[in-house]
Length: 305
Ligand code: 0X9
Ligand code: ZN
Ligand code: ZN
Image (cartoon, rainbow, N blue to C red):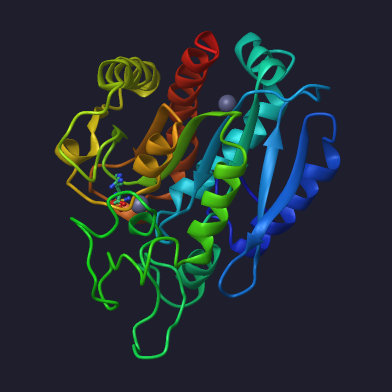
């Protein structure tokens, strides 16, 4: 059975998605944005008060990297909190009244399923191509942003393989197509990873500073302080290239260059004690503190609509 304080399998998450969407129809709807390489439906949840006009939106995905289990746990937590605090929490109420929040609970579903069934440390997709016996590409090296120019590998056996071309991975392509289709309404792009306790923003494919660098930094620092206020967890914020490492083909840089100004990558707990194997006892505190950061960013986006 599904639990917000456990690492749920894809089967559990899939039925959770269906039940969330059917039991809260005034605030939530779902749509399939495509299928994964292995044929699983990529279902996007849309949270927000129904409106007759098109609302501005925030897009958030989790589980780009298969082994980063705290990430999908956070997307599930976010949906639960949004629905359960709408009407009582003034900020959440105002957010969902004014904006829609698209949540993709698991982007790399095939990889996530593989980490539950075969190899806990798998990172990439599960696509195959004749000519190589190695499986998968790194979906966060596969977006069309300085593609494969640095911090990525053209070797199909590498964990940071950029793929055979930009958006060669159907999961990246489905997300990119959705964001392109909705680019006039999407004001923020949030992507959730682990671990290292970082709040990153563009660029990672170049050392050049983003045009909106100072605003992105100010908002990241405010979000990090909000996060720290709950349990004292320290985050570092900055551009990806200098804060973690240069790495091209990431979804954050791609969304930013498309015109989505507020583009952030979260690297959740911890700083390496448990790494990807973060104990389930830390799901609740990690998610509660991260909610504060996401809500801080959302409030800033709302203020600047
Ligand atoms: O390397 C990544 O894709 C991310 N770190 S992780 O340990 N979760 O793999 C960082 C992504 C930062 N953004 C870009 N490189 N565009
Ligand atoms: Zn990651
Ligand atoms: Zn809560």
